[in-house]
Image (tube, rainbow, N blue to C red; front, side, top):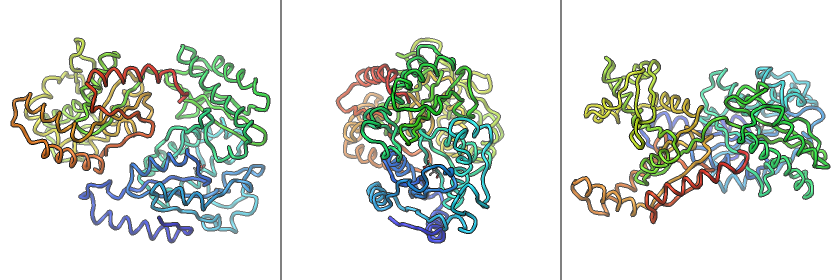
Length: 532
Ligand code: PAF
């Protein structure tokens, strides 16, 4: 692991990485030298560690920045006392396989003559988020805070130029603002929001929790309990602001030493205050326990559930996903059918199969729709711009060309966008390799379905036999499956990933029916759990 305290050192190191990446280009199977950034203010706790773990899974290089950013602290805030623990933080980063820590001093990032002691009076260029996203929740009292965050994050993104940057959902307003910032400024980075990590009593982890004594920590758990209560009310049909806020406030008011700063209901993407939840609402709380300010939130989504099933090839994902969808009356989102539909469309146009830019253009005017089959258990129907193509996409010509189309990153990107549009209404089951991490990170239930290489080889041998095909010996099959696993986990596009919050099911000694029943049980169980 390398530690850089200067921008020059960091820049030189990253330039070296990019040079290798450019010279090897896309040809290397690994995640093509991708860089993941985890911006932090140090004093790392398990919440940060979950961001780092996620970044480690998804990137070749992981950079953790540790910088207590003076611009985001108000004059009355805890900048001077903010906990710092570089040595401990470095050890934790080392254990998690971080490649680079970037821990600059304030004078390294901001010309000292431009940032006097009182950081609210600076002459540095600032990034100003849309005022309507800042005037609510924390922005109401923390004047200048989100400008400070937007400024430092823009600086870090510009210095590191990561492919992905990781932020916690606990700071929901920060995440929404940063997502808007990167979209508005066309910054080529994907921001990944990660679930809030809680202690065993539900208190959301924060570096500031170390200011709390045990009794205060116990009392502060009321925040989580009140969010859970709001979620239960919401699930029972309460969607209006007044009743949700009242329930939360009346619970918090029973805690003697907790002072409410705000309880608010806003749209999770735009931060617009809501009178009623239409599609989704962010119920957010800030409260003070003694002199410590605590925040927490829950996203309430007015939609049916999404079940994401990821796992290696041969673990039985698609069979199980179809059965789960059928038994819970949800739509099985058959991505294979979607790729076939694109292939069919390309074959029925004058665009060549390898002309990726033209295919991307074609796809932008192409609406692929999946609807439930007409009979119970029948495959879904597939529509392209209103034309039913369920049969046509199964032709030999489509089968022969679908892998060429599916290998194109822009096709995948466009289809992920279309798949996500199903996420708005929910009610879908989808299987793949990065559904729970990339396509539907908000899925209510994430399953990672796996089986040993030996078991998968046995199943494959049986399948070949059932299909009347020539049998292969087990050792060769095991070798092929192992190689496929390595390729799937390291490929640049949609590598196999287990989400941190996915439930792993080993299917070695289980039948398809056992696995299906287990997932359905989990689905019913999880509906009543944790606010997120
Ligand atoms: O969330 C934080 O710790 C900070 O706001 C961030 C994103 C590191 C910017 O200083």
